[in-house]
Image 1 (tube, rainbow, N blue to C red):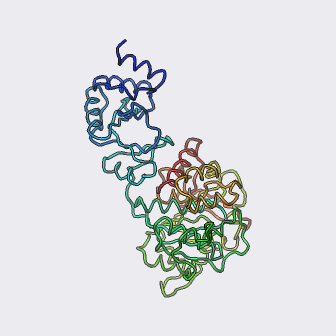
Image 2 (cartoon, rainbow, N blue to C red):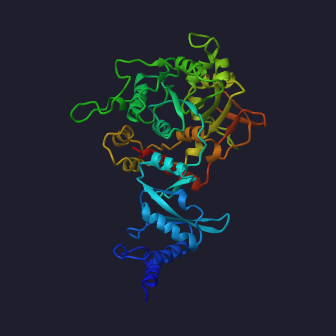
Image 3 (tube, rainbow, N blue to C red):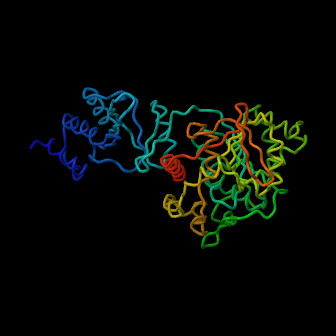
Length: 454
C-alpha cells in the first residue's frame, strides 16, 4: 500500500498517532491536508513538524494565504507554511460552501493581546483558541471607550473578574478606564481595587470611596482582607500604590472631577454594585470641578450606563442590588436624565456562567501570588457566585455584538425594588436577554481566557 494511502487510513482511525517520525513530500501533504478537510468538517489545525493537531495556543491565519480553497492554491499554502511557522489550518464557510486552507501562526494562550494585534495586521476576523475551542473576534472597530467602573468590591467575587476584564481591555487598547468608584463603605474595599490596579499594571487609575452610603450591606465572601495578605515570612503579598499613607477621594467627588474633564457625551459607566454613589452624584450641586449640578453634569457628559441588575420578563420580583440600598436606588431612578441610555444586565444572564473555584485556581496555575487566586485558595468561594458583573463590563466595551437586547423602553423602580419595563421606541432603557447554552459556554471561556493572561 502506498505511504500516503496508508497514512490516510491511519488518519481515519487514529488521527496523527505516531506520524511524527515520517517525512512526506509536499504532494503527499496536499493529499493529506485535503483529506483532513473531509474528516474535520468543522475545521482543524495541523503542525507540519509533528503531523499532530496542537491542543494549546491561539491560532491566527496569515493574510498571504487568504482565499485558498482549491488544490491548486493549497500548494501555495503549504509553501508559505514551510517558510513561516509550519502550521496549516482549515475551516468551512457555510455561506459559500468552500473549505478554506490557511498558513497559520500559533501564539501562547497567555498572549491574547499579541495574537489579536497580529490578526488585525493580517485582516483576520478572529483568533481561535485551540484549547477552549472558541473564536475571539479581532475585527472590532477601535472605538474611544472612556469608562468608569462603579463596584461594590468586597463581597461577591464577580467584581474581581469585572475589574480584571477592564484591565485586560486596557492592555488591548479597547478602552480607557478613567477611574473606579467603590460604593461599598469601608477603606479595605478601596484597598482591594488598589491591589488590582497595581497588580495589573495600571497603578495610577484613581479610586473613589463611598463614605455616606448604605450601612450594613450583606457580605457573601469576606475577602476584604485581600489587600493585607502576607506571606509565611510576614511580608506583604500584594503591592499597593495608594497604600496605607494615601487617601481616597469621596466617591461622588471623584465622579464629578472625572466627568468634568471629559468631552460631552463621551463617558460610559459600568455600574455593577449599589447605586449609592451614583445617587449622591445626581443629588450633588456645583463645586470646584464643575458649575453644573449632578443631573446636568451627567446629562452633558455620560453617554450610557451599563447596570448589573433588574428583573424583567414575566417575573415581577425585587432586584437584589437595587433593594439593598432602596432609598438610594429610588433617587437614582428618579433623577437619571432621560437622555442617558441605560442597559440592564439581569441576574439570569449570568446565572449559567459558573466559574468554579477549582477551575479558577487551575487557570491561574502559573503563579502563587495572584489576588484572585489568593481569594479562591483561602476563602470559601463555593457560595453560588456566578459571572454576573462581567456581563455589564463586556457589553460596555464590546458593544451589542455579543448580546441579544430587548427593544427600547422605560424602566421604573418600585419601593419594593421591582424593575418595571414599559416598551417605547423612544425609551432610554434596554435589557440583556439570557443566552443559549453555547453562548453561555463561550462567554465563560472568554472570561477564563482573559484571566490567564500575564
